[in-house]
Amino acid sequence: MLLIGIGLVPVLAGLLPLIEGLGAVALPAVFGEPQAPSEALRRVLVTSLFALPTYVAVIAIGQTLVWANRARNQEVRSARAELRALRAELSPHFLMNALGSIAQMAHVSAERAEAALLALADVLRSGLSAEEEMHTLADELGAVDEHVTLYRELHGKLVYRREVGDGLWQQQVPTRILVPLIENALTHGAPLPDGTRQIELTVTDIFGALQIHMSNPILRNSRASRGLGTGLDQVRQRLAILYGDKGCLTAAPNGDQFAVILEVPHG
Image 1 (cartoon, rainbow, N blue to C red):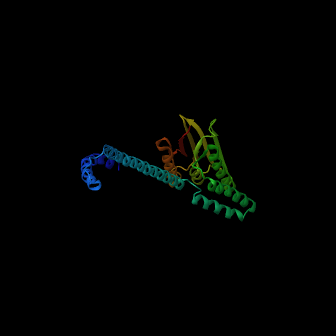
Image 2 (image 1 turned 90 degrees about the vertical axis):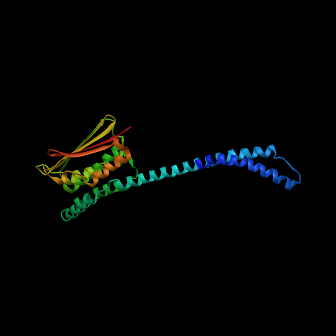
Image 3 (image 1 turned 90 degrees about the horizontal axis):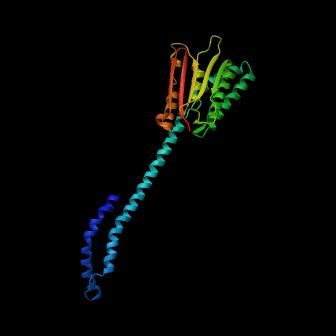
C-alpha cells in the first residue's frame, strides 16, 4: 500500500490540468458566465493530491505494524504452547513402575504402601501445579527431592548426594527440567554390590552459567542406561527455545558412570 500511495503522486499531478480545464468549462455552464479556476480551488486540489499519498502511506504503515504485532503474538503463543508440550512431567513408565511397586507393597505392609502413595501424591501434585515456565533452583531441586523420597519409600536403599554452590539457590531455571534426568537415573541406574543405588548431583557457576552435573552407576555395556531417549530430546528442545545456543545438555557413559551435564545461563 505504501508503494501504491507513492505511485499516485505523478498520476494525480498529471490529472491536475485536466481537472482545471473541466472546471473552466463546467463553471460557465453552472453560473452563466466565464470564470477562471480560482486560486483557492487550485490550492485545495494541490493539497489533496499530496495529502492522499501521505494518508495512504500512514494507513499502510499502520496496517504493517498490526500484521507484524499479530505475527509476533502468534509466534509467542506457538513457542509457549511448544514449551508446555515439551515440559517433562512424570513419565508413564516411571508412574507404572511406582504403582506396580505400591500394589505389591500393599500385600506386605499397608503402612509402607500408604507412605509410598503419599510420596507419589506429592510428586504428582508438584507436576500438576507447576504452571510457570521458570522457577528457582531451590524449587527445582525440591522436585528432585520428591522423586528421591518416593524411590526410598518404594525400594529403600538410595544414596543421594547433593552439592550446590553458594548463592545459586535462587537462580532461575526451567521448571521441571531435571525431572527426566532423575527419573532416568532412578529407573536405569545400576545398584552397587550391596543393592544400594547412588546418585550424585552438583550445581556450580561456570562463566556466568549454571552447570548441573548428575551421575549414577551403570552396568558396563548396558544400553538401557546410555541414553534418555525422548526425555533427553525434550530437554534439549526446551533449552533451544529458551536459550538458543546458550543452553546445552550432554549425556554419555563414562566408565561405570552415566553422566549428564546441563548448562543454563543465568543473570
